Figure 1 (cartoon, rainbow, N blue to C red):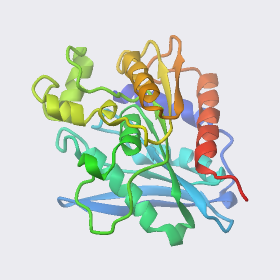
Figure 2 (cartoon, rainbow, N blue to C red):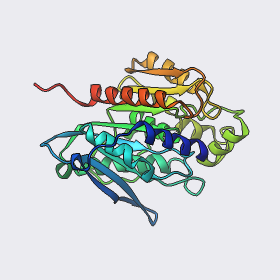
Figure 3 (cartoon, helix red, strand yellow):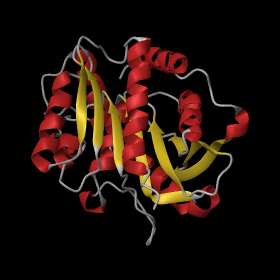
Length: 291
């Protein structure tokens, strides 16, 4: 969740993803406006297959940074990788805390999903097969896309008849799942407090609403989680609780624990392996068999 860990993570990802797809394989569009909230214009980056009739499944990649920093541009090469795999891939900018606390970030990523579906014809999109993948705080936001719906009150302001913001599969890289806990380590508690607008003790209802665990039900998207057991920022108990909730509610997927792994500071080999597994997981759930 802290900036240094995310910077190291992105360096590892960049190395793991080489060689990059050839330019003729994909089409890129950067800094596309997708929403405007309280005078703040939000943009996203996009990569898609350059050829083919479609319809293509889609993936929303969400950067980390403790909900307070980070840059969608850091994921541009990862967007290209997914586009070469046959996906329309986007990476949205979202508002940062503490200036904009929860649920601003959830509202924003949901708006990005709706924008994507609204442009179905332009990007030859399969609107029934959209996934989300995120790192750290981005993993938390990807989970919220997978487990919440209109009845949960986290959509933000939307026009009548707007497309759905739900996704059909989630890959969560060490994102927190339970923000309603107390007694967090100081370096973590301060980050969560800025996100919630107060501590979990001060705002228990907000903390529960901001926790993916609160919303896990049997109709949720399949979820794949990667979590290091020695993560000092997002405790492994977050992943364990999520696995228990998925088991209880019969939500498909799995939780993979990387023994001794920290907050993204894994080996290149582990990053390459988890990336392959993430691609395969999304293919399983987002690419229906051709009849």
